[in-house]
Image (cartoon, rainbow over all chains, first blue to last red; front, side):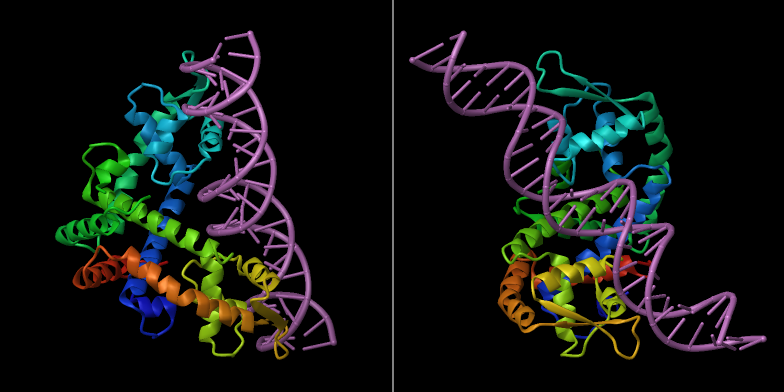
Amino acid sequence: MKLEEVLKSDAVLPLSKRTAINFFVTNHIFMENYTSFFKQYDISLQQFNVLRILKGQKGKPANLATIQERMVHKNSNTTRLIDKLITKDLVERSICPENRRKVEIVITKNGLELLETINPKLNALEENMMRLLTINEAETLNILLEKLRGSQSD
Amino acid sequence: MKLEEVLKSDAVLPLSKRTAINFFVTNHIFMENYTSFFKQYDISLQQFNVLRILKGQKGKPANLATIQERMVHKNSNTTRLIDKLITKDLVERSICPENRRKVEIVITKNGLELLETINPKLNALEENMMRLLTINEAETLNILLEKLRGSQSD
DNA sequence: TCACTACATTTGTATATACAAATATTGTAC
DNA sequence: GTACAATATTTGTATATACAAATGTAGTGA
């Protein structure tokens, strides 16, 4: 779908604005795909990301700062995000005995099993979202994205 | 910044997942840029978009359905979004006399002036966000984005 | 040990977003 | 003209997000 059709306007936009809008429209579609995908498992994309990070710890507990630093969307809300995962018995939280300012968060057996269930289907979803690009085009897109980010702070 | 640095992981990801994550990271940086830019004018990106759409009406009033259909991020919250713009005296709302189910929304003089103030600075922001791409690269990115969206529903 | 600073997390508040249900108005079939 | 469906918007609820302030803990110098 061309951008003009999305915006229902044939105004000529500066290239930079056109690129930005094209970007957000595409991102929004992806997000909707993710949101509806995760809904069937009763978790959010962010909650999934935390589980993925915890699994990457291979049993070693993680504290909040570690999790936040590895999340794509950093926010100060990790406490409440973890609260929700605890309610669902997907992670456990305890106070770090060496430094009681810290908390130690580990993924539960339930959490690991949920990841095992989700991961292959998520990969299929992502394959499908990208299916209209050839491998070369996808590689080019990645190069452009990293170039675009360049030295920009996040 | 390479994706591996962002994620602080050197795991090998499938190309489709790598592309998707690269996408969200970049999108998030852009959004932060927009959010902090609009904050100085005490409006949100979405509120700005509504003003932009109303200006495109060239005096003709728009109803909610029209505005929603032209917004990038469609949501059912346009009523409350308009409420905020009314509070700031940027738009006016009245009941459509021919069909009282509809509302008629027009941008005020204040709203138009705000757009005039914002637009050149917004263009500069967008130029800056895209500054690390050449014109050809930006064109390629647009082509890839539209190809990626293809026939996907939004 | 007392004050002070830094650290790690939690909480409060405002705003944003998505989805579903409710309300009000209009059009239509009988 | 009454019931019913369609249209347009509004409201309620749950969740998400961003930012700032508050809390509790640890380290440090006098």
